Image (cartoon, rainbow, N blue to C red; front, side, top):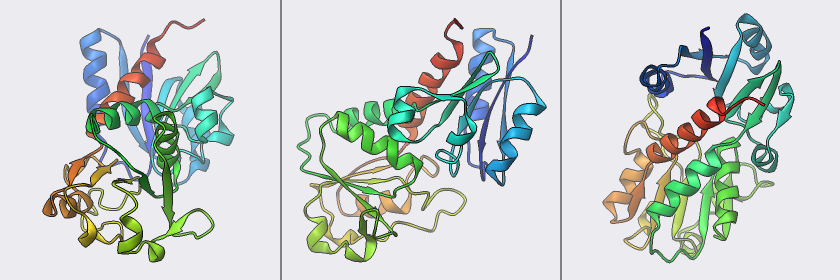
Length: 245
């Protein structure tokens, strides 16, 4: 029996997931197919899941938070973060998970091995940022958020060169710089950055966004989101293929 998996979000031209998971299913001898399903609006979700019998789905921008009311249940990490990036379908029930926390924590820990982080600055307040802040809390790294909305954190206008000196880890959770719109970057005082800073961008395509390129020019340590992507995908694979009770 063919099992069906996929990715929902919009747009999805940048996604590596179909090729990655289809290769894994092939190597494991599992009869399954994984496809991208670009949904222009989250209201299209119900029609999608009625169109075929899905075993699992991944969720990406901009639906990691919007998907929650449409699911039957959440695992503890998804409930804690308020964001879902993996769905498992079991006995006609949809269960939301968050494997981004696992993926980001593992990747960040490797990136910062031996480093002394004073404080982290998280750019963005969307679904991906929820996983990032949950991981930072687990690692006991103090952080502040930066948002265009002054009720949700420091605004970009308030992020002066003096203020950014209080942080030596800056994490971009926004889609700014993601392919195909690679000419954009978060509006932060880049000239303040130096070799003592660590920049982490959740984007993996392109390999070096303008955000990371600005850091490299100034000698900062940089990390993109590719390893995080692999780690969260492997965790999703485990969730989808664990025995159904």
